Amino acid sequence: MRIVVISHVTLDGVMQGPGRADEDTRGGFTLGGWAAERAGDEAVGRAWGRRLAASSGYLLGRRTYQEVLGHWNTQDSPFRDALNNAPKYVASNTLAGPLPWPNSTLLSGDVPAAVAELRKTPGDDLHIMGSGALIQSLSPLGLIDEYLLCVHPLVLGAGRRLFADGFGPMAFGLTDATPTDSGIVIATYRPLGA
Image (cartoon, rainbow, N blue to C red; front, side):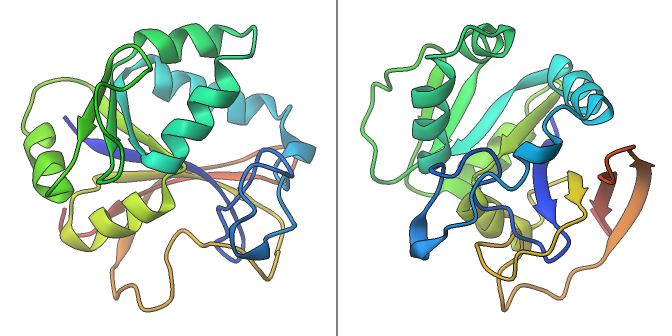
């Protein structure tokens, strides 16, 4: 199966706290909720929906797992049911099993090795949402096969970025790009040589 990142990012690469002001305030980040203004973009919803419908599950870092569990399980939404039913692989060396969310498997110890093993299993894509630290640990090792980025026409100037300072060099090929009426560009990239 392939490992695919699905993420909202700004023009300056910030991925921290797109959904709500209180979503992720680490480092004094006060600009959370920056994607909410364009949350109703139907093209983005369709793109995410198509991808998530063809998913073998989710690969999440600890913080994202806890955030998604805490938020989406309180919502009356089809997304909640889809998340509850889907396999979830949680990368963490601080959580202890068993995990509270149904269909959750803890990946601890050598997480990149565990992800490399997951990639060998048959199935559809395994999606990473949020989980910036996990993405940054897997990307340099060639363990991410594709990035579906919803690039918002916005520069924040602060916040955790998809690729932190010191990452790279790494080249990507653009495989698809769709501009939306709200100004978001839905761009799909694959690492060259992957």
